[in-house]
Length: 395
Image (tube, rainbow, N blue to C red):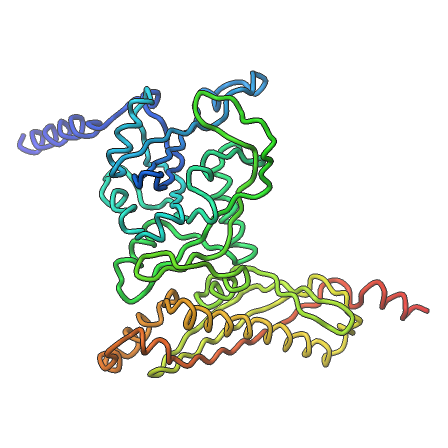
């Protein structure tokens, strides 16, 4: 009898508490992205992108006057206040659990990014798995209010572009808000994150008429890595430096390395790249091993020759090595920012030695780097010769 009573109590609690926070879907506006800017009065300007459920559920043959997403804008002293003001413009409550991206403007990031992310760490309804990017040479508002040709919802376009970039090029990388916060909490690493820009904007294109602000057709493109120092944006890596950054942090899934020869160029696809970093006092060794495939050649190189293949391997290795050394020099000497987390690595590998470091910034400037790159295997592709060389051989 006692067991039956306990079972009844448990079932009652499940029924009572299980749906206390239940809301009808048609009462909510699904937030796909949020942008943070500063307006001309130095207030925080919030742009909220929500999915236009009416458009998404409508027949594709119907009128195309409504966009698939709607943006709301509001300014205030804090993000919370700005969001509450937006409620006055929206008939539905915003639901941000499925939020895909957060875009922060350069102006905010240069000020101090911690001022503009505190809200997102405290709101219990927001999951911190959304991607975080910097709006480079533009505003977060413009990024989120610009129609893109390939994806009907531009936050999806940005998210998928970042995934593709990470997988096939290595200029950008996927970093969630949770990752940013973890790096920020760790005082032994400076934060960094990918950036996004607007390209191919047709300024003569008429704006799409909509209930809210959805603006000119253009495209968004993942750009290079944003570099921070003491939580403030101080600059950007170049595309090549961003690839080197990905090599150092072992984030390369796939990328292309183009090398010169006497008569042209060879493009090789880097695959299965692995990076191992060793520390010994103020000496850091970065060891990279990878495989490569020759995807294109305009050189008169005999790919059937072991000697020529070894020359190509050395050329690829030197290309990667030089790019990494140049990038390390830029970040170490120009930006003086430890976005690679070398301080954290030395602390973990040799805590006894780390205790003797009085000033990390001075120490960081005098670290010696030794970069080693080894292309284990180099595949030649389906043909051994360029068409031009093959024709010469057949004559």
